[in-house]
Amino acid sequence: MGTIQALRGTRDILPEEVGYWQRVESAARQILGRGAYREIRTPIFEPTELFERGIGEATDVVGKEMYTFKDKGDRSITLRPEGTAGAVRSYIEHSIYSQGGIQRLWYTGPMFRYERPQAGRQRQFHQLGVEVLGSADARADAEVIAIAANILQTLGLKNLRLNINSVGDLEDRQRYRQALVDYLTPYKDQLDPDSQERLSRNPLRILDSKDERTQEIAKDAPSILDYLGSNSQRHFEQVQQLLSDLGIDYELNPRLVRGLDYYTHTAFEIQSDDLGAQATVCGGGRYDGLVKELGGPDTPAVGWAIGLERLILLLQQLQEQPQSALDFYVVSKGDRAEAQALVLAQKLRQAGFSVDLDLTGSGFKKQFTRADKSGAVACLILGDEEAENHTVKLKWMASKEQNAIAQAELLENTDELRRQLDSQKP
RNA sequence: GCGAGCGUAGCCAAGUGGUUAAGGCAGUGGUUUGUGGUACCACCAUUCGUGGGUUCGAGUCCCAUCGUUCGCCCCA
Image (tube, rainbow, N blue to C red; front, side, top):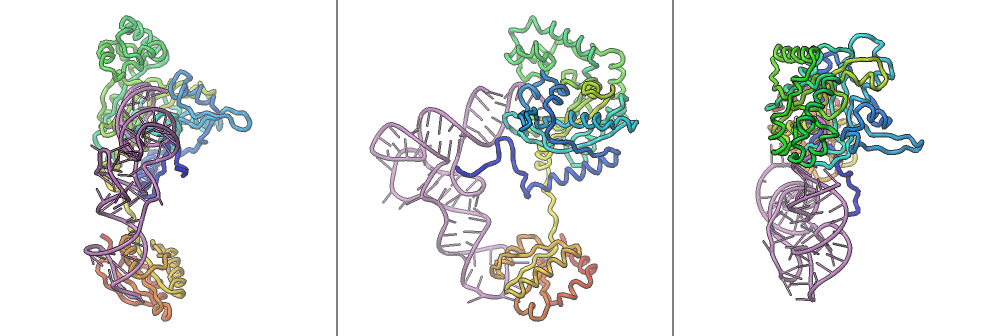
C-alpha cells in the first residue's frame, strides 16, 4: 500500500482509549503530589555517552537496543531508553543537590528501545518513574515501593506480586559473581546457548533463565544473600521490616537481577500473570553509585519505573474506560438557525457546559440519530421557526420531553440548568 | 538478531484452483424533505499487503518482500 503507516513498534493512542491514560496520569499525579514528589521534565534525547556511562556499556539496553544517530553537528545523540539517567544528569547539571536535603522527583514520558515488538513491548513506550536522591536510608527504599503499590492499588489492579532482592554493594556483587562463575563453569556444556554466552558477560542473568535445564542447574547455585556484607545485610533486613510495617506483601527472590549496571542493594519488581511474557509492570531499586559515576557528588538514590502500556493493558482487562457525559447536542437546519446554533453553543461552553454542535447540515432525523449516539443529556433544536423568534427547543433525551424557551432565558439561569442536567444523568 | 503463526472493505469475517469475491457491524441515502435508540429498502472490495512464479485458470499453490501477532534474547 502507498499509505504511510506508523513505524514498527510505535502506535497511536486514539481518543477511544486515551481515557485510560488520563486516568493513570491523574491518579499518579495526585499520589505523587501527596508524597511531596516534584515533577521533572527532561529532554527525550541526550548525548549517547550519558547512557553508555550511566546504564553500562555491557548491558543489552546500551549494546543493542539504543536509537542512536548523528545529528547535523556530528554529535552522537540517543533517544532515551529509560528515564533515570536523564533525571540524574539534570540533578547534577543544575546542582539540585545544593538545595540540600532529599530530592523526590518523578517523571513520565516516552522511552525508546530498538527491539522486536511483542505483547507489552514496543519500540516507543511510556514510563512513569520516581527517583529519591540523597538518602541511603532503608525508609527511602520502602517509601518508593509503597508509592508504587499505592498507585497500582488505587487504579484497582489485582493479582500483582512484589519480588524483592538485594544485589549488595559493588564489592558484594563482585565476590558473588566470582562464586557464581566458579559454580557454573563445570556445568557450562549443559547450559543453554544463551547462558553459556552470559557466563562471561553477565553471569547473574543466568539465574533467571527460562530454560528448564539451566534452571535445574541454577537451583543449587550459591545465593547472593549469602554474599552480602554486614551493611548490605542490615539495610536489606530493614527494608523488609519496613515493608511489613507498611502492610505490603512481598516475596524474597534471590534470583531477581536487574538489567542495568547501576543498581545496588535493593532490587524489586512488581509482576502480573495477566501480561504474557513481559510480566513486569514496575521495576526499580537502589542505585547508590550512579550520581557519582555521572560526575556528581557521591549521592545515594533509589527509584523505579512503571511501564504504562503494560499498566494500561491490565487496566483494560479490568474496567471500562471512563466516559465524560456530554451535556448538550445542538441540532440545526437553515442558514439563520445554523448561525444562531453556533453562537448559542459557544455561549453555553463559556458558561461551563459541554456542548457538541452538529455541523453536517444533514436532515433533522440524521442529526437526532447522532445526538442519540453522542450520549448527550439534552438536545437543543434550532430551525427556521426558532431562529425567527430567537427561541430554542430544549429536549431531554431520556424522557423525550421538549419545550420551547427563549435563547436568552436559557443562558440566564445556568445554575438551575446545571441542576436539571445533573438530575437527568444516569 | 533468532523462531513460529497470520495478512480478504473502517472493523469482524466466509472462502482450501474454475463463471459476477458470502455475511455481520459501522457508514451514506431513502421509507418519514422538523424529531433519536426499532423496522424495512438501496448503496458501500474491477479486488484479496506488495512483487514475481506455476497453471488454460490463483484470494486459494510456490518464492521473495513488507507488515502484524506471539515467543526467545532483554526489559517497563
